[in-house]
Image: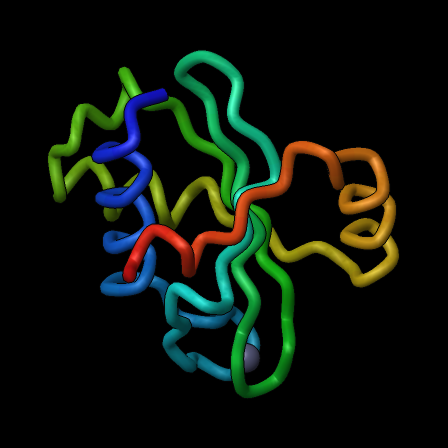
Length: 105
Ligand SMILES: [Zn+2]
C-alpha cells in the first residue's frame, strides 16, 4: 500500500462521500483505516452529523486512481454497518488502526 494512494483515497472519499442516512459530507477526521493488506483497504467512514458508520472496502489496482472509476467504486462499495459490528471490528483490528488525520498535517 502506497502512502500517496491512501491519501488520495481519503481525499476522494471526503470529496465524494455522502452519508446514506442524512446526505452529509464527511472529513478526514471522521475516516478510520480499519485495515490495509497488500492492495486492499477497508475504511470506516463516520458521518459527523448523524454518526452513521459506512464501511468502505476497495482494491488499489481496480481503482488505479481514475476518478470516475473511483466514484463508481465508492457508490457500490460502501455499506452501512451497525455500531455493534464496528465495535467488534475495532476490537479485532485495534493494533493496526491508523489515525487518518495524521496524514493531513
Ligand atoms: Zn449522516
